[in-house]
Length: 313
Length: 189
Image (tube, rainbow over all chains, first blue to last red; front, side, top):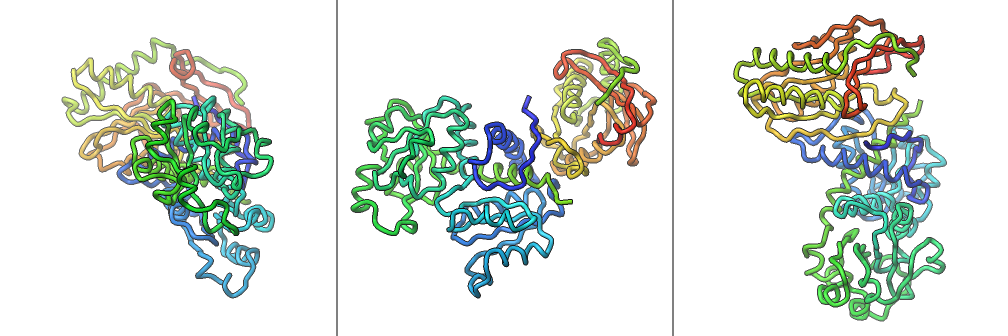
């Protein structure tokens, strides 16, 4: 029987704020929602009459569409705002924008912003629920939830698994959220990347650090490969793309040579094909990248449903 | 929650007899059971649906498709209930179009659960008809809904509560009526 806990949180700002039971509740709920997506009419009336705004101040395809679909599958009304087509360009502040939207009776804001802490800031100045869809290099909680959901679905557990996160750890909100979620659920997490992309004191979060892909691949059962984010690097952190591929690009040859077990391959997308992942690995038999995208909708439905439970009086 | 047991109205044998009788009534009503499927409302209705389907197999020798509905997301009181409902997922693996669906629940009270179930069922297709079977009808309907097959009518006051306990969920087989308190009423769908 699934555990029934009382959900008290109004916002989802990061995995750091959640405890183990809350994470498990979200994953369990998502399982129920995944079934809905396979129905002849993949829609339920749970959030009828709620209005959800997606406010994306940074480009996104997957996350925005995934949130929007999740909201629509639950019968909520959605409004999309992108920075490039809104009054941000006229100099309106984030706070003013959202308070104005809120004056139109909305229930929830889903925000992506290049500044870490933007969702937290918003949650303090509006009544609506706030969901973090990625803030700078801080957190991307729904990505971590869908990653873990996918791992649990494929391997049946999280506890005790050797999970390795490879790439630009320092600039990655996906890495940060994943580390919080995985360690809370008892996985053994290793991070691997060039020294220039490793945050100081990352060991304090309970992970093992390695700069050697051979060592990382040896024990790993799950590999979460991060995207090389050229847009977030002010200075070049590695000599060139070819050096990165040689050192940390995941190829079939490397997996064959160094891995002891079959490794589940995750990637948050969008993939730089031929850089962090080779073609044959990205489309290979252990790649669950498209499952992640499908599961993303179910996980976000669970998030929207849980947070919407608390309607303002 | 509930304080005192008022009466035990059914035991294991009683439940068994009722399930058998309802199965016979279903077989009589839907001659041959050709296009019949049984769908239970989670949690206890789903177990009762399986038992009815097993009985139907014995009676007519035909394999009757069974499904289970989780009506959580169709409830009309999602904003009012205090505890967090867990979505367990609906399991309907057969094509519903053209079938006669026998909807099964343990206790029929206000009728709101059945209303949710009807809404959800039609999202899966267009059944030829929907019939309703309940183990206990305790009255106090708030919607124009009536059962086609009733196990037992139990007159209750609004504050009382009826609990069907099955071995899969509770480890015992019985139906118990509890005396309610004044502030404990009407929250159940």
